Image 1 (cartoon, rainbow, N blue to C red):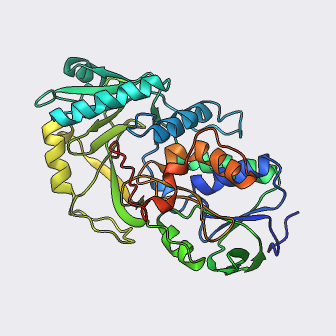
Image 2 (cartoon, rainbow, N blue to C red; image 1 turned 60 degrees about the vertical axis):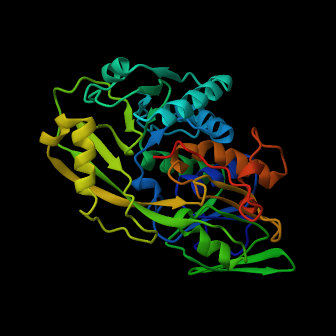
Length: 385
């Protein structure tokens, strides 16, 4: 039986969302003996369980394509490893394009995705409207679609990884806030928590939007800012043909997918400013209504039943931070995913496991090291919604 407070660990994983639980699972499964995950609230209580649940490999950056495709493979096998039903619906992702420059960028992206084994393709406006019947063609030039993409349930993914991690011997401490990280001579010696001190030589920061503060505790700069995003749900649409792909109007960022008998809707708000805001606001609804009216006007007559606000963890180039700090030995991080962390969780758990064990990951994540910002080596990802 696990004791109430761990006093020593081989590695402490900070953050109990999909990234932290995936890292803990992969480390424990690989035989790392004393893995301790700490989460100040409940598992998935940060950004993960407020995510839209989309999973895809359609990206413009080769590393993201590889991470997305590897994760999709893991999601399809999730019921056997780690062993949890996640309600995966591979209904596809459909990006609607109305600007010539976006069409050119997505054509290049599809070509790269195809080279890497992703079955994405450019489709005509007519086919896009057949794939997603709520869409009207006004102003559209083309679309991009991949049938393997889709969505699943974030809470179930977290539960599966947490259960699997425990089964392999990891300890998970919820209601356990990190208040300090002890370092000296470029090495980690302990993590201070609200439930006691854990002696450890290694830390993995998977704290999402809160990662910058965790990094500062160890003297590590992680340029991550929190940015509120909101989701709403519609009343049932019993006459809507199914399946409905995850549909994204790329110019406005409006997206929707089936959720129960209705739809989940979301959209970015260009007026939103960074901050830890989790209360719902109606300020974005006029812009949402305008985007719906232009792209899926039938939805204007459908009522809303609720929604929530969550936090993106945004970096300056909207791409992730994955690596080990050059100055503080054994301070590893997986954060800053700028809206695509949930869908990359399985693959990133593998990568961090291998970085910790000194093995070469299945794909080179060196371009995502946080040092790229100091060296002006930004790596922008355009397929963010």
